[in-house]
Amino acid sequence: MPEASAITPLQAAPALREAGAGGARPPVISVDGLQVGYGSYVLMRQVSFSVERGDIFFITGGSGCGKSTLLRVLMGFKEPQQGTVRFSGRQFWPGSDEDRLAVRRRTGVLFQQGALWSSMTLAENIAVPLRQYTSLSERDIRRQALLKLALAGLSGFEDYYPSEISGGMRKRAGLARALALDPDILFLDEPSAGLDPVSAKLLDDLIVELRNGLGTTFVIVSHELASIYAIATRIVFLDAQARTMAALGSPGALVRDPATQESAMMFLTRGQAGHAGMVDDPQSPEITGMVRVKSGADGTSLRHKDSL
Image (tube, rainbow, N blue to C red):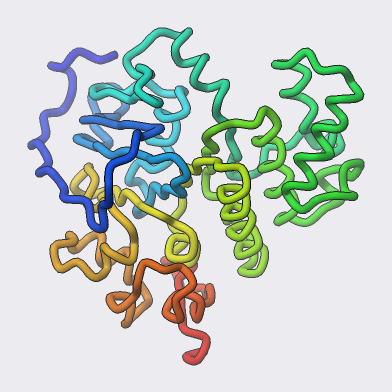
């Protein structure tokens, strides 16, 4: 870890009031005063939030704000410069390799491109972590692989290779592999990247079904407004210019809160004139009436169906 003197000094960020914060529950992830960078460069500072059991928690913000870097810290792949991370009260950063390994056994990861082995069938891909971390027989490994594929809506595709299925199905197969060891927490890095609107919506629905059916907690890096408003229980918004977090809470509450910082409000309402009237319920007409459309350099944004 770099010495404190080697870190670029930045003014401490003001404490944020969480929009829409409800009653306290024991957090499965607790982040306090996190500072992350490379060498002497500070990418983000004073990041503090908690993820509760059953949350679909989004890490969001513009390009270069540090979303993926923060995810790497939470997954144990990158050490922060300052601050602490705990999982269910157990020390993660700082902590021993044994502590982090014990926590990582309870997590699963869906990488942006799915990261499936192209020379293996879908069932064989899911069998890899089961062979490595369990003592199950080959027969039971096969049964578990078929079960996880069924949970991901891929029953009947177990003997297909990744090249033989669509991009959306590959994302589902990657999610099935992330579920192989029945994790408590799933980390998803830009799960909708490269998907058409229909496939992205199906993936969102699957995430909600898994949360409701298995009680899985999701931490998702994404800038997709359609997904954020449809399934996020809470978000943290990272501001690239300020190099810190600028908003924390439910997206519906944030867009209605006049205290929400301008950078976060601009992000959450980009391409929209009427987000400020949205409510927290993902099934509300304001949200279900949205569809994904492309909007220049900003990528995907939301529009009401009636306006298309």
